Length: 254
Image 1 (tube, helix red, strand yellow):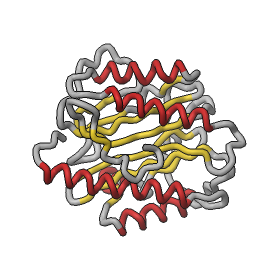
Image 2: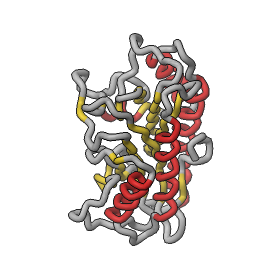
Image 3: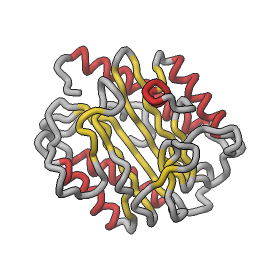
């Protein structure tokens, strides 16, 4: 989507506030002993109270209101009454929603309770690398160069990136052009960020794996070698200067 009016920007700001508020509330609500289904249902109630509709449920029939991925799971984790949150888990929550015809996407990883498994450096790297990448995005900048920056920053921190999960355009639907904003340098990607375009930029930072594979539930993506991945994501509007970070207002991962 490319914004053409103040009304469109206001619509995107409303849905972005709904997803970022829900994400923050879910992070604060998470407790050891809670199932991922209980946490997801809390998020679903939050979205409903804010007038928003779960995007993965609306667009793809996803069996949950939000995506909750634990430990070796990378993305699209299906909430379950059998998955119980444990102290020290690496938890990723991805909240996307539609409101009045506008769509936004916001996600973040965190350590639940005490960091007994030393996941915090990975979480911090993913969050900081996203901040760095967003600080470099301008109209006219090559998408491949931002991917290269993410990959280089991950390597500098002692980590790798997942190459088959990407950021994407968003706004009037959940996934739009540009279809792919990778976390690595793709020399075949000649597209550039365009002024007033709306995109969701993500960092998938890994301890070892570079690819995620789909589990038998048909949704969840996980690392094949048991390594860990931290993801952070913001929906932004590209400008000639620093981007407008639509999902930043209520996010603890701002």
